[in-house]
Image (cartoon, rainbow, N blue to C red; front, side, top):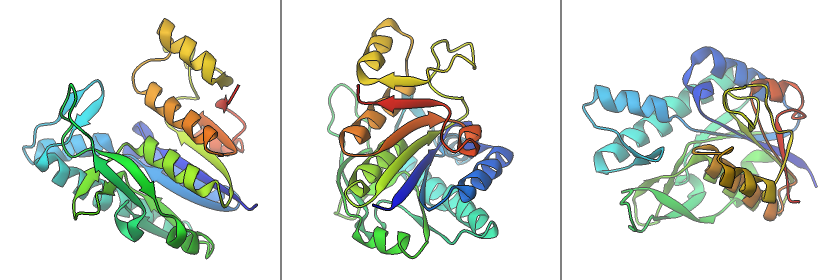
Length: 259
């Protein structure tokens, strides 16, 4: 099968113009077919403050009330997504910006209220990739914003790591998929205070052990859950790295292994 690389970029990388341009240069240089999935939470928080919309977070996750949903739709699908698309065009990559609503790409259900009401947050229900594959096979580069829809006309805020994993899993039936989570750190760290303490390979059982002992905490946990979920669904390779890792041909950072 043909190879495709899905790069999910988030954190400080997507928020700083210089680091974003460096990332996009490295992304364009990757061989073969590719998709970029992006976040943009810091930009959303900043614009929300300017608009007088209060940002509420619980354990690093954004509570998306109706006003916040308007902000994240504007910022993710508009400001961040279209700036990335324009930059890729300037670098010779014919890109198209998409959300989960476009092409009925990713349908989600509003997260049910348990202990916390997350508001208009969507949990992925289905992924429809036929039209996406038509674009990919014409060498178009999809740039996917972290928004889905519920099929009833409502947009939903959805974790970008989850969207990347869902897309990778759906495309694994048709391509050899490499999934890369790219952020500001070199990989998963065994010591959060030492940027060089990269865990080179991580199995699911070792991940759970590190989670219990507090080595792996907070935002890294959903990223790894999504990464291992992708492996279970037929994705060929998953690694977590920084922009240097893209330059290294995806051979640095933390490589996830089933066992």
